[in-house]
Amino acid sequence: MKTVDAIKNILIEQVNGYRSLLILLQKERGYLLNLNSAGIETLSKEKDNLSLKLRLLEEERLRLLEQFSTENGVDGEMSLNRLYDITGDDAFKVIRLQFISLIQAISELNEFNRILIDRSLNFLRGATGVLDLTPLKGISGSGQLLSREV
Image 1 (cartoon, rainbow, N blue to C red):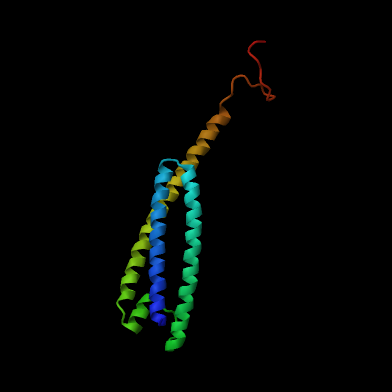
Image 2: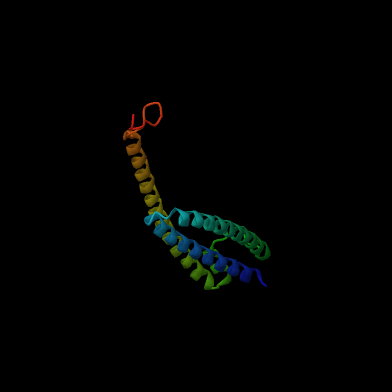
């Protein structure tokens, strides 16, 4: 397999990985809105696994770009636009647009989820603050339960 084809395959895998991340973030939004802590915990593990996979794909992409640069005597940073300029392969333009679209969507959804998490935490802090201020009947200051029969 030529290096250019290997680079395209890795880029396509990365695009699919980012699509999966977007789907997970959409599920996370639903779980946050429904206060589904079990679902959030499961998704967190899935996001960790996907993050590791994306990191490995990125390392392989960088390795392949280095190999391509060496094979073709190209110096400097290798962007998707530069790959298109060198190879003339329109697939690199298409993949670049897919990345831009996915990253924008992920960024917006991630910000929305962050706001939901912040609001949930503020709600929980407020609720625990109310509980701290509310004296519980039947409990003395020493922490002993008093019986009403006395």
